[in-house]
Amino acid sequence: MSLVVPAVLPSSRKDLDEKLSIFAAFPAVSRVQIDVVDGKFATPASWPCSAPGELSTMAGRGEMLPALDRIAYEIDLMCLDPEQAADAWLALGATRLTFHAESATDLPRLLASARNRYGSFISFGLALNIASDLALLEQGLGEIEYVQFMGIARIGRQGQPFDRRVFEKIRVFHSRHKDMPLQVDGGVSLANARQLTALGVTSLVVGSGILKASDPAAALAALEALETPFGV
Image (cartoon, rainbow, N blue to C red; front, side, top):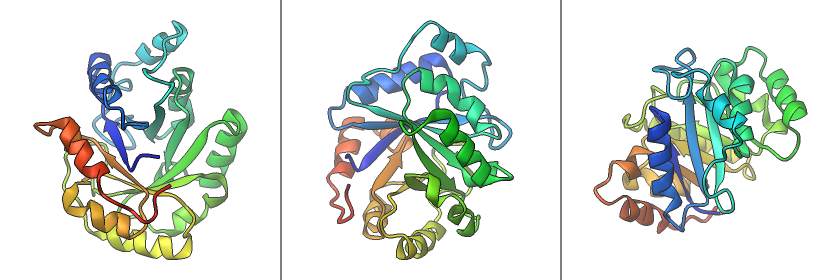
């Protein structure tokens, strides 16, 4: 599995299509994360939350995400009602859902409901904000396949500065759960990527660090070239 997971925070359907076409052109890309921001749990609202009905219309027409034969799409649900937000994305071919631990008042119930609703063919992950207690993650470990640590203080926007507090969170969590795959989303760059992988991170979620680079392919390749002893 690739070390780097390119991320898209779409402002419109056109924006999504354009960015996914960039990533689909890179042979090294095997996973892509699509960020979904509802404007309530995190702000500002991203597409399709900013254009209600458009995603359901796509699903109703039988449209699918591109390059499903080699790319697994994970949907990062920064939403207060993540299950409802997930439905249309799954119809389009997504196979991984990332829930945010802070988005539910009863996290075990949310995860059990999602497992019952979507079955075992969907992989579930749990994201944790930089200021949240690690104890939140402990509630859901039996239902998830990976943990995503947010590397920025304000989620829902790309291009935010990296918050070094995440290093200690990762160190402590990994010391307790060495077999749990870990990914970091937000502020990831060549300046911090090697330290993250040394701490046990197996996936680096990168959006603007690739898309805003003068040469996106070279930026992706530079990150992929990093060696990690915890690769999966």
